[in-house]
Structure formats: structure tokens, C-alpha cells
Image 1: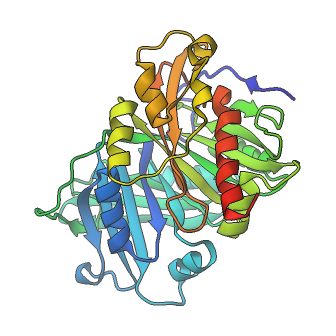
Image 2: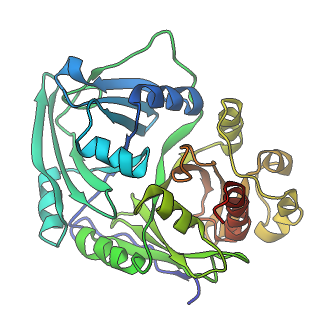
Image 3: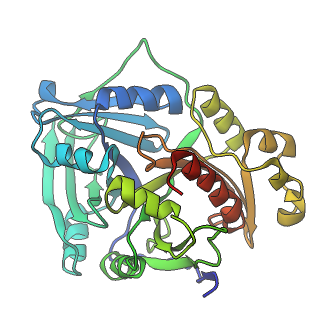
Length: 377
């Protein structure tokens, strides 16, 4: 099987039973939410937004919400052992728990998905405070990851009921130009990609818009397969990876081993100026994968003319790829946890709607060098 691209036509609103308005927030279960929030503020340029914990009537956890433009992260830690959050961290380490999706009607979203076979995570719940009402519901997806449906059209507060506004006037690092979630990638086990593709198609009305096989995504030593799932209106995209046979352990296998199960491998963050964003992130200590400088020797021959100067791209290690609608620039961080699991992608799209197929070989060879240094290749 070769790479296949389907027609990326969006469904009409009348036919889309799960109209998604985009990613509302990404929630991470972490061992120390206060320190994690500080990391994302200082290293990635987020600002303090809201807090929930014992002071707000929440007794089992502490959560810090941070925001940069339309990008919101929530860092949650348990206050005692023996609960879902503590068990999640014990099994997986720090990682993504909830990919929360903005919807016009969270009750209908839950009804439409559960009647199509989704396992309920949270029945529709109305949360209220002096700033209005927010409706939340949720379903399970791969591993211990969940999708929360967030309806906030009647809510005026900083984040959601149960949280209070949180500011730190003495610590307001400048943003780094990160704008919103471009896509989130899930790693699933052997022979599990197609069942989860079917889940997203049948339960959530997504379309498979792009497929890569092990010939597309392979090196001398390892391989994987991937399919990109897109919501009916195209606002939310979830690529799904599974391992493929290779001489040595693939990056997906390493993730599954250290995450101890399926989960979100990386979150792609959009920017309008990747050179400026990556320069700023590196200056704050964020580490990125590097490809050999020979990658740039024939770059323009491969991708054609681009607006950017080649020198800063080479210096920063930024990758470039082109499809029939334009080109994109991308760069991948090293894992941001001690376990080689979660990492981030920084992406700038100049018309392209693809995911950088032309960079796969160089990228995965860079990942393999990291795996070999860890003794996990």
C-alpha cells in the first residue's frame, strides 16, 4: 500500500452529527501540577489563567490552566494516592489524559457518540457559578485517553466553574507565538490502527483523509503506519500510528513500552512564524531533534521556492515539505518527560494541509539516534 490521500471535502452542517468547533483544551495528568504549569509558562510562553484545588472546593486534585492565544493546557495532579489520577501517573508517567473538544451542544455530542458505540466517560453535566453555565460530557478513546465535549456558549468566566482566575503579576513571560492545536497524534498497539480508524469513522463521523504505510514511514531499522482522521468540518485532526515490522524497535514500540499502553504521542502547535517561535523556545531551554545539515543541501530542489531564508532554517533544524496546496515548516521537540513519551511539534502551514511526508525519513533517523543513546533502539 502506498500513501493515499482522500478528497478533503467537509460535510455540510446538516450531515455532521458531531460538529466540532476546535480543540478547547488539552489536559495533562502530572506528578506536580504547580511545577508543570511553571514549565509551560517559562519554557513555552503560556500565561496563568485559572486554578482549581482545595481553595476552590475541589478536594482531590489541583489543576492549573494556562493559555497562549487560542491554546489552553490544563495541568492536573492528585492530592492523595489511590484514585484515577494517581493511578494514571503511576502507570504512564506525565501524559495527556483529555483531548477536550469545543461543541455547540455537549449533551447531543454525548448522545450521538454513545449511541454509536462509544463508552461513556462522563454523562452530560451542567457546571454553574456566578459567570454562567458550562456543559461537559465525555467518552473514552484509545488507552486511558478521553475526549471531553465542552459547551461554553453560556459561560463568561476565565475558564470553567470550579476554577478561580489565577494571575501571577510578578511572572508574566512573553508568549512565543504559539496559536492553537494543529493536530494530536495517538500511538496504538499492533494491529490496532484500523479498529481505531473505524471508531473515529463510525462513532465520531471522522474521515480518513491521509494514509501512510511502512514503505512511507521507515528507515533501515524501524517502521510504522499511520492514518490521519479528520472531523466532518475539518477543524480537528487526529493521526493514529501503529508499529510495523522492522529490524529494530520503532519509536511507537518504545513509546508503548515506556507509556505502558496506548496514548497521545505528540501535540502539534501552530505558529505563524516558526523561525521566531523556535528561536524563542530554544532560548528558554526547549530541546529539539536535529537532522544532519546535509538535509538542506538539496532542500530547494526537493520542495521548490519558499519565502524563508535557508540559513536560519538550517541553523535551527527546521524541516520543510510541500504538497499540492502549498508547503509547511515543522520541527519536533525531544520528549518533555523523563520517559521517552510525550513531545511537541511546532508547525507553520503555508497552504499545505499534509503532515510532512517528505521529512519522515530524516525525522525518524533523528529519533532513532535518540533511541540508540537511550539504549532502546
